[in-house]
Length: 100
Image 1 (cartoon, rainbow, N blue to C red):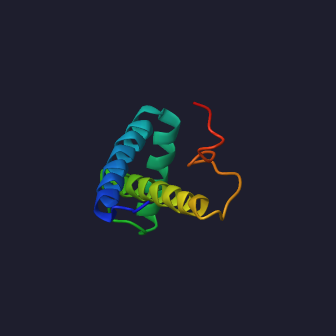
Image 2 (image 1 turned 90 degrees about the vertical axis):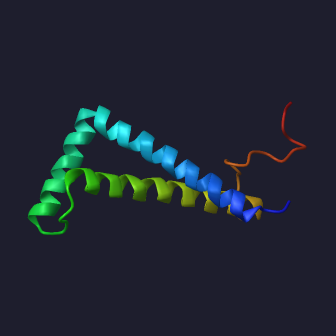
């Protein structure tokens, strides 16, 4: 199977954007998570580790988490496809074992 690099990159970028939206919504709708993140931002600002506004700081963190998730998933899939991991989780069992 040939990997279409440009298509893969475009698909992964779109996935990162979807994950960012989902993570941002989760932070905003879970009061305990929101409070923890805002507290961490306040501490970072007080320690002069950031000059970013709350929204910019949150968005940077959300982007880092989304990109890390996508890259980790791609790496695990690569390892599975090259028989470097057992059992396979992302790609599933080989075609001859799958139930239809």
